[in-house]
Length: 347
Ligand code: MRU
Image 1 (spheres, rainbow, N blue to C red):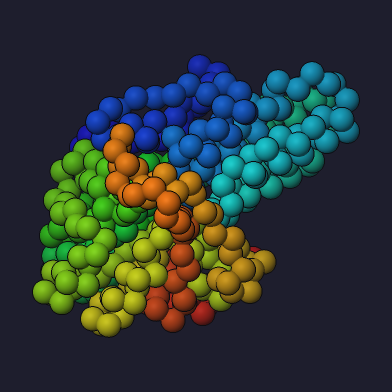
Image 2 (spheres, rainbow, N blue to C red):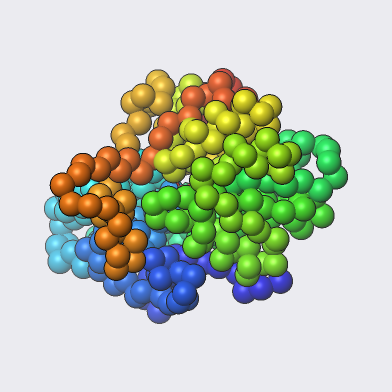
């Protein structure tokens, strides 16, 4: 067993983030002591992946709170709302960010003590969100194992993007299911879509697999249908950034086409995500805000410009997979058909 991967860690009064933009070539940490730096780290994807963004934002709330200079409770709470606003503006799609900021604001509002006591409670709350996410992912891994196809004995799974330890507080959602399958001897191989344009599959998922000795094959996104037709894939497992009440799922761009080709080949398609990724306030996936990122992610590879000047780009970072293409949504409370996900609201 290798050293566990913790993308967001509280240590010596500041947050340590694994710099995910530098992986796999460099494994380095960035120290974050101020909320503005945390906001920038989320926007620039030093930290990324829905649950990890939530954990980072929770610590960001504390970092901002501890720098406030007022001792007046009402003023403190009002300025905390401003800090929340800064963090909420970083990335629009992953609902875990908003969930974590809401929870931190609620913690502050519910604490009847002094400003110093509220601030202390905010750190406790952020650490709790951090610790809970690891347990949640382990539960997702166990529930996922129970719904994977029972044959063949050793499965070839396909995933998209990175929904691993790096995208959570540790362990991972989709990759948590893969890890659990590997630990139980049920995994033959993981196929990882490279995940254009930011290559989370090629850079991050494969890196995590190498750390754990999980056999991994990286394919270009366009190869998934071909691999399925060749009988190389037994099931698909992906993560989620936001799930609407009807079970529609927003995840990394390319997930929708993967679900369509899985359906065409009668290959089960699973989504693994914690309850904090479900947005019960949204009727369906058409209401999920989709982040659009800078066109340079498309026209530039490393230092090289790969497109001619004078053309237009469209770079949505996520798409929405309709519920009917999904066999089950695997949560910490079990695996459910998408149509039943709304029943989890009061857990
Ligand atoms: O743009 P990213 O890298 O933050 O997108 C990440 C994904 O789409 C993941 O699949 C999703 O957040 C689930 S992570 C457990």
